[in-house]
Length: 276
Length: 266
Image (cartoon, rainbow over all chains, first blue to last red; front, top):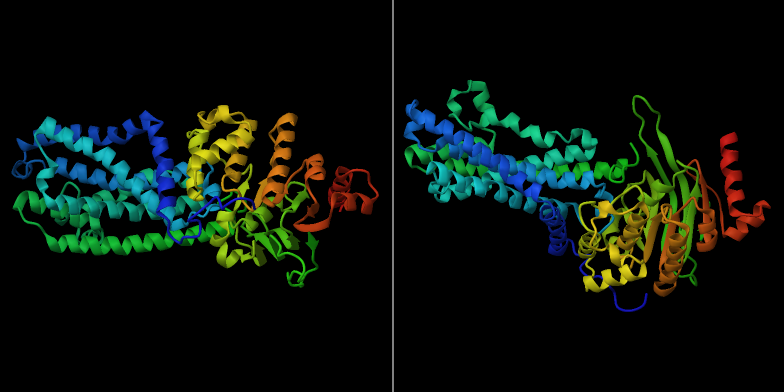
């Protein structure tokens, strides 16, 4: 070799530089494509418009909705946090599958957990781009501010983000293992949890056996907690703590599954599109 | 390069420099399914490549070349055998090596929505390259792609994409460069320039180049060592001249065709 070494930090077990490189890569995609940014905000905006009118109608026809102004819009916005968090994680991963770039990434010093960290950061960015404009639209059109939930809103937001990341880890692992044939999971898997999470209604209306399943989801505690704030003006810290505990368990399990499938992919030649 | 019989340990002689690549009894099968029996892609190969050497894997489609390169770069886990690159066991310490090697392959691609410059910037950051702008400018000049930097990768021709992939593979000044079909999509003039550039790069950096190619002229010109694979095994190895002399043929292509057709006849 001639001259000084041209690289640094390559051997570090955890490198913010490499995570930053991946975030930059996804930022380039967003920056270079305005339809992608519009798409991020479009669906949450339409949801708020739709549920805003439904809320206005029900407020005059339903005592339950009338008592809790904005309960449905709040639920829509928080549901979108969960959906966008999961989708933002999975879509960034899919970008690598679509561009056949995984092998380039993993022949570099990038560690799988650094890759996951970058996907997580992009999930946060994409969720904020999607949900924040919708929240302001609700203020403008319906005089409902989700920010009136106060500090619990921050907790709800991060608890749902974490659940979205846990789901994203499992979904991306499945896509890595089974290829783009499993791509639709990124869009549809989360909707299986909507009826169980009690997004728009109390969990108590579910059959007993389904309630038991429902209480295993962090999202259930968040939506029940949101209704407690709106209807009773109380913050259910027990709900927040249980949701946090479940999130930690699910993220740990999802991370372990992702790393396991990464190893399987290296054994089967899936990263390079060769092999089984 | 030294091809070793099975069971012999990859211990270099005291006077010889440590090999850049040492492979011992490497095997890889792709698992059986309900429809297919297991396929033995690589079947007990062993070899060493010295620093500064250019070695080529030749073989018909499906001979095991890409599988071998994937294992050497850590993308694929072997069933058995050992791989040492730059003195590090790839099974246990590949992250000590990955920043010092790089790969270009037609089986992988770079994001098409990013410009060439954006792609190179991302990979320069992943490899921890210092003074990224200067390094990209150097590569753009050396690979004659200065006018391509601002273009989205998806708008490039196949040949331009090959040059971009090569630039990515050189971004960290790798000590070992793995190239799968490096000039396959290039016109003869550009391919010749690339070969000249790679030879100069190797001489300047004392880098090891390990390539898989179907271009016999390219292999004869660039490589000090050639290994011809068939059915996952290294059937013959040596310098291009040695192989030609051993077989009584006049070109490496004739040697290659003899082996491949012998395989087909069997």
